[in-house]
Image 1 (tube, rainbow, N blue to C red):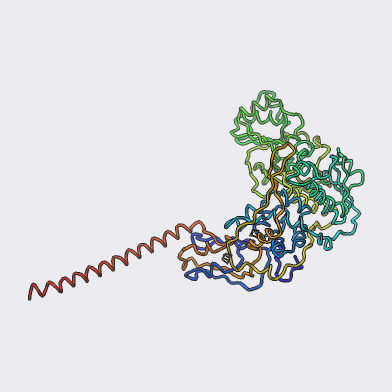
Image 2: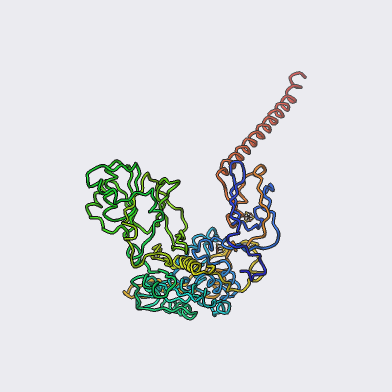
Length: 592
Ligand code: SF4
Ligand code: SF4
């Protein structure tokens, strides 16, 4: 983006993300990242309560548009959409390739989290962001290749296990950073289970193969029919790092997830409690107990804790840890005693504060790995970590070290994609791959910077913020009825026509472009709470706060009271006037 001369580019980390409130009772909320400083609210306000202090300089705020924020890989959708709007389809494809190596595949099957948050959805419907991606990728002449930089050889070798979207994306980025990358795929076909299992009418094989060929043409070697049984063998045979992208089959079986702080001395060792349980003595572990592990020891301890008077007992189990499996009767008895079993792909960490157990945090992660100093790093998926408080945390995951397995994540080994998060989403896998590639590069001595600018600067016209709003309905995505392999009929989306793509791109509200905003003021002392500013804001930057309804009702009541007062005055004047007139008529008659 630094190539763009028409706008000042503000990197994502420097975009102001303040959420201000206005008024003593927080009558209004205002979001800095959403405000484009267009001034519509200020112009429409009947009592001049709003001041938008701005210059005419246009800024492009990275990852401020809702579509780009929602994209796990951070594709700059608004920018490629503007290129499509100008008929520059290859330039649009270049923007996508700055963040993902599979734009055409994504154009067919992405779960499109961007569309559900598109600001245009507030009006006639979201932009057809996925269909636009598919259109641009299908009409790409490959000019982005002229701008791509494959770094000089670093002399490092990286093995990637798995050739699904996570594996191939990891390989693609590491290759660009100068590392020699070999991808090992257990299956005879490239693309992994995720891509290969998608029916042709949703993702034609030639689309997938075309994008894999591009990755290979840049230097990545893919070895099919190559099942890897142990990462240790790879590390001992000359690879400097390994990326595990082994898909769903890895989850809970061969891949191990670490539980940070599970070895802390405040955590009780489950094995040490077994003797007490077997002697028929009661366990006193407090009211809330958490047991880590999914095997026999974990269930014995959980049952003992529940019978010992604990009000709440949770087992956080991951099948691959703990060694011996619990017997069915142990599981049944634990459940009957009210033990709650959490067995999922969540990433757990023990929370210890000042030597005291606080509980266990659980969240989903995209990817993880250890740095050179042995420190665990991970990329959480958006969403808040759920914290389970506890008086005691018991580790029943077996003796440390005894759970070493063929796919253990240790120093030099990183895990991404379905193997970690079970998202089964190509864009999530690519986002995870970006984290892994960046962290492997750092592990190997690089700076981990994956970003390259592949698209040219945008035109001054394209980067002019939206001036007026006209109703425009979405284009229609063509759909064909096709016969599937089992003979049934299915709807198959087709590529948009150029005119439909350009028309739909023209609906974009350019949420990422803003005038240079110096100050935004709203005087609630003057405001009459008519709500026109809220309605006028195309970007939902100014919205009602908690105190808005009360303030609006108070104004309404005052107006009604004022109205009643005025009516009483008018009535009184009328009565007096009539009385005077009657008196004027009657008095002369009575006394005349
Ligand atoms: S209107 Fe345009 S910039 Fe805004 S969210 Fe939708 S596609 Fe993105
Ligand atoms: S709050 Fe909305 S209407 Fe007001 S200046 Fe910002 S973007 Fe424009």
